[in-house]
Length: 264
Image 1 (tube, one colour):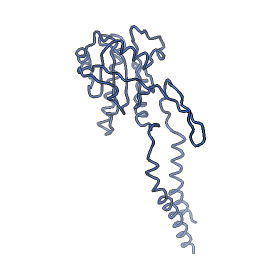
Image 2 (spheres, rainbow, N blue to C red):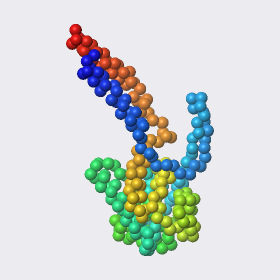
Image 3 (cartoon, rainbow, N blue to C red):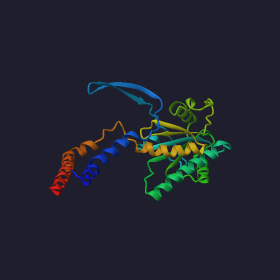
Image 4 (cartoon, helix red, strand yellow):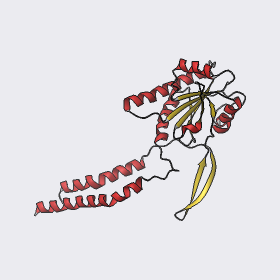
């Protein structure tokens, strides 16, 4: 076989396989999981397999800045970004809210310019001073900072509900470098929840570098394959495997045949 023949075989067979192994070797490091609830042991193909059941954040039902009662259960399939604030805060909250707004605008800009659907993300800001922050007060605050109510809820409700959620569901007390006061939660941490409401990251919302990483991690989590959902991609491709093999084999044989014919 001449050099052109071998080149054709290389392009048809070796190059696709090479791309596959390179992609597999240098896969993206996904955001980690936090807080295992339990480990389930099962047998698969004669081998013992341990499945970690990660902590799933419980449902939360509160009022948003428009006065509507909303819940996390209505956000199935969405990536959720959660932070904490109060409207009369003069320290970290304005910086945190502005950084969240920049992230909101960046995703919307990407939606317009790259035609990427960004509706898979929901921003949630929980007030830690619900006695003062009524829906009307939060609406004025939201309008001042350019909050888009379609993608960003500012939520208020019973203080105990909000604080229990912060400490027991998001487990902020285990992340803050300074112990979180259960009487007044005041932190710049932003939490990332995946489509199954499992915690996948904590980011300092007043740090632009941390928020840039959050922006990347949102996309990684959105594209992540759901391990609880059995993929049917291979089953759909299975009928095509034989034709593909025959085409590849035919290409190799044709190259060999015509190369020998030219030599004879």
